[in-house]
Image (tube, rainbow, N blue to C red; front, side):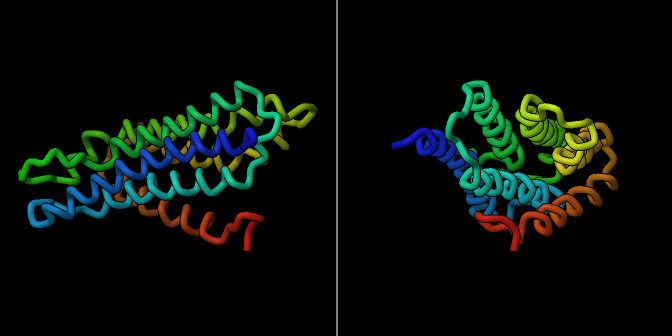
Length: 191
């Protein structure tokens, strides 16, 4: 087994734990379906987190992990930890009790935590670009990181502005952007 397989194996474990936690939470919600107060906003936020996990795993297969410095390995693991934390918080855990669950109340209790974790993950995606920029101008570096900076701006606005209308508009828009931008990509590029 080469370096890439070891790294991808660890990524699979952390990503798998995040997906497993989300699936277990969905199972708990479906199990007590009639006692759940459903709302589109937390479901859309969960979809954003879920697709972020899947996309991170998808992109990792396109990366060249040979000669990876240890600090970049640590950054990669920290990105996954941030995604795991978002996955853990975005939906309520199934505690086995048959109590009523209000998804919107859960969202407002944990949304800053979720969006902060996704913000951290995206900042960590930009960090490896900095030392590799060499003689790149600010404009070239900005061009490389602009989609991540845009996403960071969106998640920061969700942290700062706790207005219901802002979240009800922006979270579904983010989901639409993610599906549109990532949906046509293949392991070798875009369709």
